[in-house]
Amino acid sequence: MAVDFRFDKLSIRNFRGIRELDVALPEGMPIHLIGANNSGKSTVLDAFALVLKGGGMHAFTPEKFDFYHDAQGVASENFSMTLYFAANERRQLPAVQGVGNPIPVAGVRVLGSTD
Image (cartoon, rainbow, N blue to C red; front, side, top):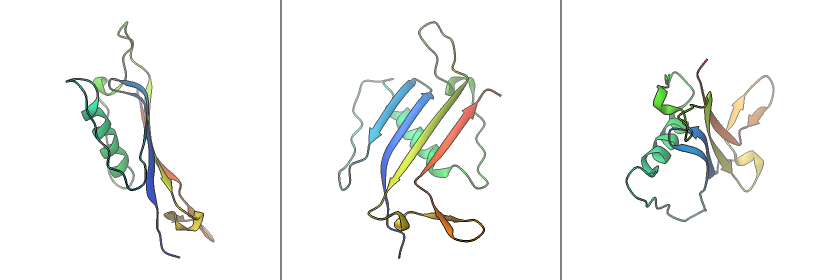
């Protein structure tokens, strides 16, 4: 069976100005990001871009401003963004080949740390 999946949800944690955000990606519907200046629209797009080009040979070195800072200016020690996939059948998800049968992949995650 062919790979036939869609993006289902983007979850962002402790990235730039976003402490916690889940963006549903409904099938067949456009997504509109509307808000005032400095409200996080570009941060959502940057998170989406990072998770889509993560893995492989891509290297991303986070800067101090990439970590969420609370009202007292304390930075989080890590951040994450996860893009979840959905398919009608599990075998339609993209897969990685280990030893033996391919393993379906239900999402992609990017992690950042101060370590």
